[in-house]
Image 1 (cartoon, rainbow, N blue to C red):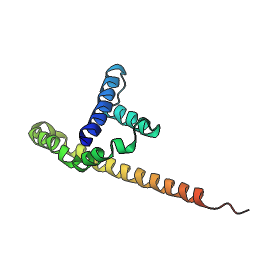
Image 2: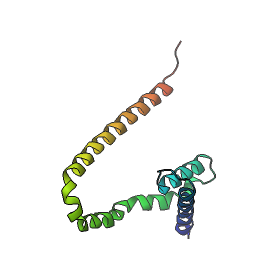
Image 3: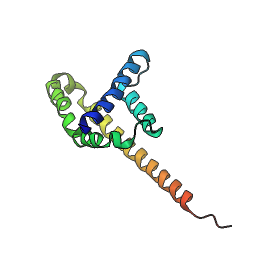
Length: 123
């Protein structure tokens, strides 16, 4: 029953994100609206982490499984994609490296910031 309640909370927030996407005509996916809403609800303790943690962990664990339908669809679109495969591969590798670099630099910045905040002020 706990998992049904947690999934219901996540699904309700996702539904609210879909409704916002319908009314706010910005090029932002509805899932991003849902993630922002969930983040705000967690930060304000309206939704406690225990209210969604187990189901959230389950959904993260099965995430690779969710990519299978998209990958299968790509195999059926090979005739349309074969003329642009090289730009797709170059873009994929370039954006992957950009994301890796940005993530690494962000992590370095956060770690440096944490070290500074934990240092004792000796004067």
